[in-house]
Image 1 (cartoon, rainbow, N blue to C red):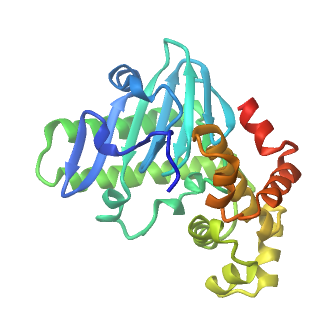
Image 2 (cartoon, rainbow, N blue to C red):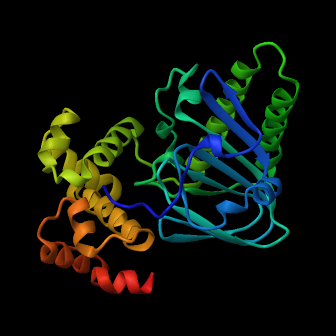
Length: 289
């Protein structure tokens, strides 16, 4: 097994956690969150979903090697396994919310939060600019969540789940207006993303993904090209490259070990593949990371 240097935090690692029947939810002001958990300043992963709402401050937020500016009225979304870190001004304010997959699934008819477009880590941008007139209604929902957490009256966990669902839907509506080129079928891309996540190290052919989606290889490729202007193979390769970059940056594995971890047992072939798509050898990328 590879030696992991990058921390992977669980929701139980944070204070002010709300636990109900092994289902977890967390809500805090962002400024308190930063002050109470200084260990999150360096790059890290989580095994839960995150919504970050910024109301004040500036800086940068880097998610899987892409750096986004931080400004008021911005929201950021992270799915389990994504690597992120931030550089923020001292006056940064907002709210941060965590929830586990089990917490979401307990009562919702939807089986996976990835049905929401901003949790499609492979296909969509994890950032949203919130129009000023829509910020207050979102903050009102956050206030209701806080009240339920504070008073814990009858059926409060169920009420929190309902407010969470409302928040996700309202954010999705804003997201779909801002990003007008969203895929028509979220369900297809959710299933494809899950399949890629589970199999990208196995180097399965495109036909494998098509069969699991009840499509022909041609149909899947055409759908990918029409939606993302990329082939299915290109999407799979992007996931392999992302994992390679994560391991090169955040582990002390040798290049040979990283190649093997990603299913490449010919180290020179892995090196050629990596350079073809990044313009750098694995050694050069690690040196510059």
